[in-house]
Length: 328
Image 1 (cartoon, rainbow, N blue to C red):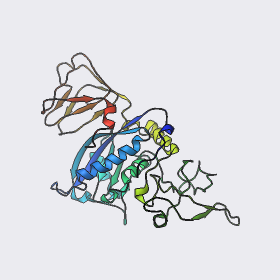
Image 2: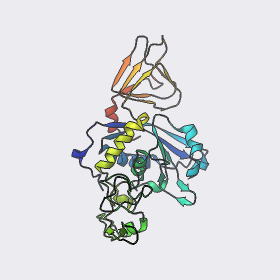
Image 3: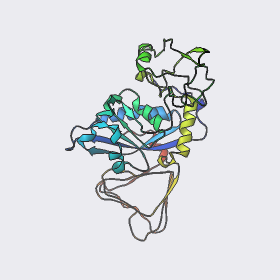
Image 4: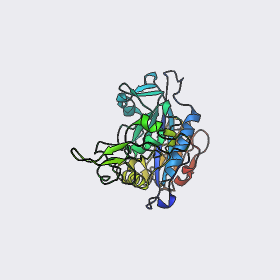
């Protein structure tokens, strides 16, 4: 199912560049990585294409493998055991597990907060559009069937304060099995007749749901999820600008010196990097790998210089170029 979004309805206030860091979990000896490289790239490719439809470019800032057998089959309640050591402060972190549990309940993914700067995915998420779904939560989107604010009526009369707080997503309900059974597997057309009473006793006002079974933030047939609305896109951009701006590459950065010792660790992705003067020191000194600077402009003050890594060269490319790069 292709991504569906009216590009003429994109938010008009520019593209966002969100930095992403992938952490693949493996056993203590480095074997049994939770996801294969091919699986990661396939999921990243679809997710990145999806969010590009609303002018959100996902930049792959880096990738590593965390060797801890206990985290392969993971209880989400223990996420702080990982994030306190391995979260990359200036990126949205994705942790890839074999299985993921929330108490006794298995799940494909968990964003831990709305919005948030990290999330987990299990192998069950592969092929289910779950990476984009959990990214939606991280970007500030609720499920279309959210009820914590109140149950939304299908006539949208209470859409601004109930449901997912987005008025152009139709009212939805949380019944995974019912929506799967009543959504055509090939056409993704919903044929159910679930109703809701929108008035309190003794009054009745039965309204019929037309749930958004193709929306990225619903449940049901996961492979049908391919749409995002203008209202959701506007909400995403709001949170990227106001709550998650530390994860984006819109700003400028002033550096004195960077010293990297971890192979392939990439840390810089901003619109402009200004390199201050600090005598004869190296601006970049990466002993056993390479460093990528991603910026539209590099400004060197007197005395600042580059020092390439062991491969003999360094790379500088505009931020925009990374929106269409291969995943990893």
